Image (cartoon, rainbow over all chains, first blue to last red; front, side, top):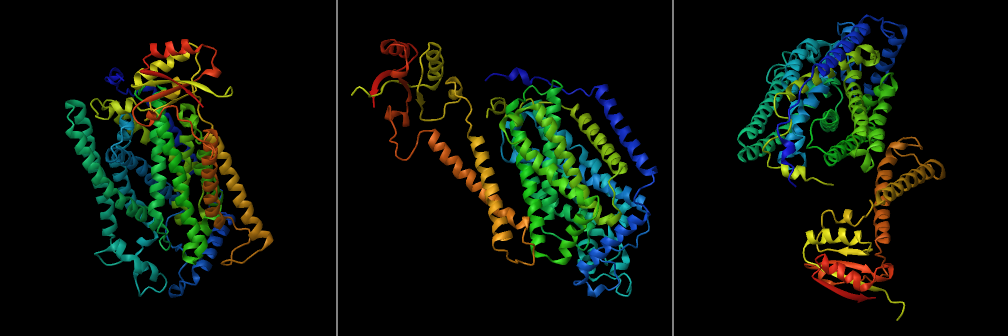
Length: 457
Length: 174
């Protein structure tokens, strides 16, 4: 097959129309956010909310009571002694949750590329520039995460309170958290500055960004001189990155997601967060690819490549469900109070109780049924429907992971949260599309290009 | 002897020649029964005019049968026929049923798919396979043309086959 002419110099042009659409999207998000802030919250300070909060606290207290005799007087799953108002807490939670979610999307861009190199995949040569563009969000997410952490830590991370580690403080001392303190505060004293935690955050983002610019440099150098060495170097770097990512993604999940529910623990969380990130990232890659294709770009990508991307989304939707179920099933069956408290809260209090099931429908049932047939995976229109469903579904999933741990019974899913998500999405797409203009849309001398052009399934 | 099936068997050495030959022969109105090749020839199924297999639909239906059968069995057994208290859980208790349901779905859909495949590909256990030319397992592409199903005369088909690059044309009866 001699289709080399179609890979000639294709470049994405970030048209002002698209740009203004994204600005409008951001504006709409901001507007919704402001309305959400100003609107008198239905739950805030109403008797219902306090009732709700009381109920969850009661539940957690009962569930945890048997294991927490040592900390009599401490308020069950999480102390309610934090200063900020519910509204501020809501904003902080929403910021943190969205940043974790979009960090995932960005890092999956790099992870996808690394997988392609390490497995020597040929089919994906034409689509590799889309995940590469998504990776440009990594430094922004890293900075945002670090800054946000210092802003939100007192409200989002219960374990940061010094009193929990003070044996003399009968009111607050928490034996369980004191036992875990090394994970956060090593090598300093428990209750001081969590140097280990912050260091991990910096190192993870540093390594991810380092490998991102490294692999990107090799990929772009290949465009210019066409040397095969770049491909071999990329493969080596990818393999090293994958090992690093295997450890760091898991620990990052403990740090940024699991430590919010500080008493709770699950050995599945690392996998769970990764699975959610991975399938969302795949849906995002697919969605941007089909959108570019719809706009007349990416002539090297045909329905065979879309089929493969569709299979990825389909398969990893099932993988996510498998991990979700494994986590739920083990906790359900073992029935250990300090574990079940996580699901009890998420099953009994609105809006978590309906998100619990919406989660499964959006992330498993719909992609499973809609993407099952071969034709569905090969059609742009079907992928354009399913990918946003999956992305939205996993946004709910992240909401469900983070919010109940912070907000307890006072959690809400209103305009504030939706506006925040839209703002993040607009910013993420803006960065991605801007980066996409900086290099050719299709690799010029990729040794796998010929294989990708002849890809037929 | 009259109910014997007579075939004309064209032998091809090269897969590109074969692909063009299949196209030309079908254009001439000759029906090809089957082509046997020692390795998968890319695009052969298309030029032969095969439509996509409906095996996935069968697999889905078998899977659905597995899902409902497994769920029904467990709910009926543990919920109604012989309720047992296990770990203090409810009798109608969906989460522990899911692994069994999943496995049974996979089992039925796999078995069903293999069975269906064997039947539609004419590989029933009691069926003796027809070998048009043993070299199709070695280095030759073998095209079988059922003379009974074709209106074109034997000599004409022989000529067309030769014209399109068949290295040999043999006759075979079963």
